[in-house]
Length: 529
Ligand code: ADP
Ligand code: ZN
Image (cartoon, protein in one colour):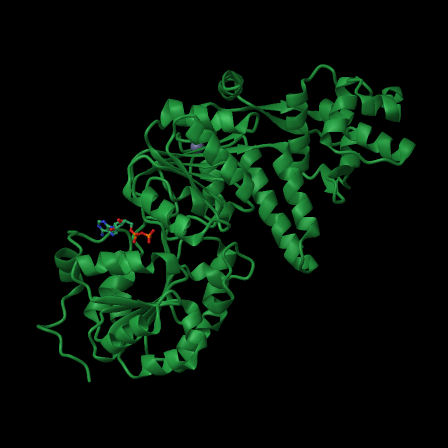
């Protein structure tokens, strides 16, 4: 049934040069491609922008039959197919956005052997007709893109990915290549076991992105801080700003537009046509800033994104690394900037407590958040800490905020004791719990109506922390939370001490705090005007 190819199949290098117009392979591309062409399975961990696509596109051209690519990125399939068609690769896709006639056309092309590549949404494989269709043609390989979607613990879990083990059961001789830019050991193992990639060769690239400058500063006036970042360092640049909620996406986009910046919103609550239009403007126009929830970005291949900004704390280091990895795919200097504050910590701890799911699930979310907080509060090189999280050893990088202006580690034992003893007294003497704002009011000795009404000016700790500003106290609270010396309890975000707190209160455990370097706090002050 298959149409005969005109001429012999190209070699991998010929395909690279003639079809894609590049003269050499990057990183481990050549070995990965050779493995798959020879019929072996491969599990590829490579950072965003590393060049994963060619690892399955070239074997699809070289091997007999059609390379079948499973991808969750339905919104991008048309673009991917268009890009391949433009360089002469015969490609098509099957997903839920097509009408039956369009689907039939692609199916016919596949059966006639006229497709080099077929992109398939994972849910297509739920219908047995799809597997039957695949059986009636020749499958060159299966590529499982964004393979971390199989991880139930991860941030991009897609239930349909779990059934992809059927590929191996049904077509045991067809080589499979699973690819992801998510790099932790846990995810790595989970992909291998869930997709039955026991025999696969593993290709793990370095995850370092040396051209990205990592910076994390404390949240003061976040939108002003963002605006000053854009104006002073990234005027006219393309960038992505991540916010946690749809409402803050809208608010931030409006704010940037009012300040003369070309900014567009993107979140799941927007009409799909608006979303598609905004995505396409971001890809095609220069200097567009996309303000988005994390719904945006997977699979987006825009080489010249110059900055990725986070206005809210990401839930995990993995998520943070994926999102920031969308900056600087072209290898030119780029910025990953995060503003993070006390409220972020309180909010996320509360969300974890209230989340559905068993204890193990909550513990895993808690551990993810702890790692993210440790990154935020570190006084060491951010990149070293990031890479260590992914199991890589490295030396201080010289291109992150802590390398460029090292923060001071200061002894925070006394402020910590003042704060913790206030929390303890409120509970012991009044049987009360409060959130950060009120506790700080007590410490700095502010007579607010609530303080008066509760008689908290009678507490022994009232006013004992007047030597620090509100903002500085918020920093102390944040860091104690990050270090597990204070915890959030209940749905109102009130605080309680932890098992570790006692050793701080009795003086047997010193507390080290991170003092924001001058440069950052000055920038924050300036941006207040
Ligand atoms: P990933 O999927 O890993 O994020 P891509 O496959 O999108 O990365 O590749 C990132 C960019 O690098 C693309 O623009 C791609 O064309 C380019 N690229 C990939 N491999 C090579 C190569 N060997 N030589 C030159 N450019 C390459
Ligand atoms: Zn560094």
